[in-house]
Length: 65
Picture 1 (tube, one colour):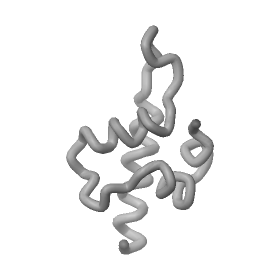
Picture 2 (cartoon, helix red, strand yellow; picture 1 turned 45 degrees about the horizontal axis):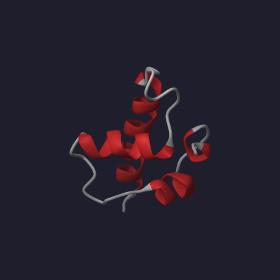
Picture 3 (cartoon, helix red, strand yellow; picture 1 turned 180 degrees about the horizontal axis):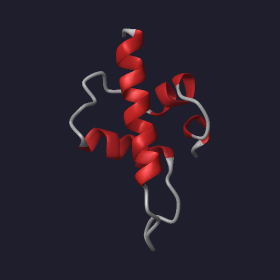
C-alpha cells in the first residue's frame, strides 16, 4: 500500500471519528463501529480491519476498544 493511500484511509477514519454522534444503542465509537462505518463507505478495497488501525493510525483511533 502506498503512503498516499495509507494517508487517505487514515483521513477517512479520522473523519468518521469526528462525525460520530453517540446514540442510546452506541454510546461511544468502538473499533468495530469505526471499521464497519468505513466498510459502509465502499472505500475499503484493501479490507483493513482493527489490527490495521492499531498498527497505522494515530490516537485516539489506535486505542479504540
